Length: 234
View 1: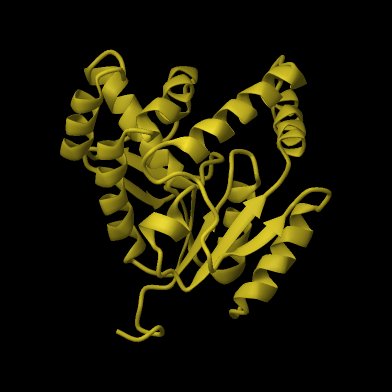
View 2: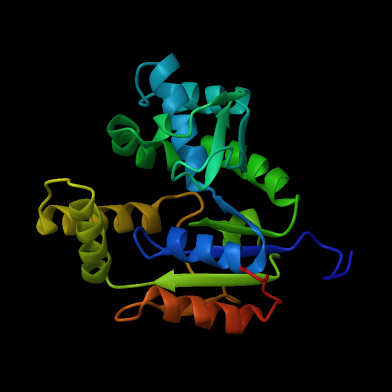
């Protein structure tokens, strides 16, 4: 299969709060592609474990449950702020996976090798639909290492914490910048040092350091790199 015949996948990787979701959604809209945040699948697996096992501590049990679960991502069925519908065994769990409890446990679940193997297989199946922007931490290195385009978004921990702080404040959350920064640094260590599929830059990725750049600037850089026709948004 030549390059033009392969499902067209744009891989976007990067650390927590680097702008993957925002840039990925805008890029997909510009290109008329589907935006797929692979992180939602780990959240769905975490939700399944919490609901059926009561915790996420037993790696073997969580892995087995994930292997037995069918997780899918479909275009949004309504305009309530969601970018997609998340289905867990045909049940819509789009908002349940955003709970605080899932947030607190998803990092642990995402580090389990068996979970990552099971979800990587499902992510590839979804990616084969083509015309897709896939965002995560191992898309260009593990999930779709032969993706036609690979973008790695980076930013300092301080800049990412500042963005997350502003975002949470705007939502009405009472948070401390120092707590957010500490959490991001811990997540970076966790993601880059985990044994299986650690966060790293693919050798052929186009790297954009987003420190001091607006979303529009990052989007423009991405579009110049990809150089594909954009859709008429009017």
